[in-house]
Image 1 (cartoon, rainbow, N blue to C red):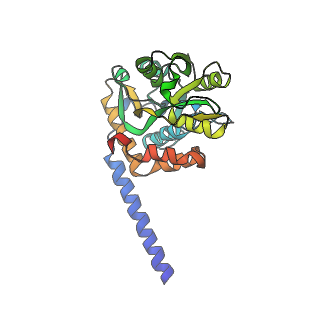
Image 2: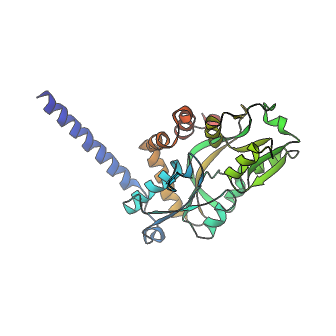
Image 3: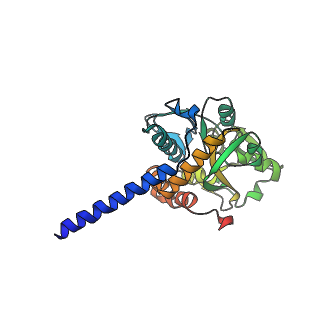
Amino acid sequence: MMFARFKKAALGLASAGALAASAQAAQMPPVPESIASQQTLRAGVRCDQPPYGYQDGTGAFAGVETDMARQIATWIFGSPDKVEFSCVTAENRIPQLNGRRVDLLIATLGVTPERQRVIDFTIPYRWGASGVLVHADSKFQKVAELEGHTVAMPKGSVQAKWFEDNMPGVKTLRLNTAADSLQALKQKRAQAYAHDAATLVVVAARDKSLRMLDDPYQLSDAAIGVRKGEEQWQAYLSAAIKRMHEESLFRGWVEKAVPEETRPYYLEVFETARPDRK
């Protein structure tokens, strides 16, 4: 009898959960006909930035942002396989979007006034900060100490703009990809590598010859990018992000993509309010 009562309670909870999920789905805005008629979601993602977007040893797309795209495809088309990924870089991602090669960007895209002039953004799905990676035996302790030295960074990144505006004495070595920037540091063509702190946390954890400066800067939001004039699509994607948070989906994606030693950082940026907004 005890088991029967437990089973009945469990079924009741499952039914309640199903009803809640159904109610949430009913609250989602309509999908634009231009997207629904395609039968496939075309997503621009990063292919060289774990744990957000990358290709694993088999060439398969992986990472938290690729899982976000698969979830959106599931909600729209009923299958996580109904998504076509395109690799984008910091430099070419906005041209890829505005050139209509992709339907959206989930590509470590920080919200900036400059970008808001040419594309629109959804609500943020995480916050982040910029960081600097140096050799473990480097003399540098603070970002300000990089004045007069060479810092590698991806072209078109928010870090490139930040150094241009705030530390014009730094020689910026702007390269095509995050991998190229890291290689420049390791080959000592640059004294530091500036990028998203979350990306650098992973690199530093895997390579003990490198370390991050304990000096975060440039707090920012990351959001999905859409073309100007696509308000219905923007509203749908914002609702999708809200639903992802309500259903605690980011935790599972982070646990899948992030090693245990760096996982607390990522859970914080996806699940808590930005420090300057608490």
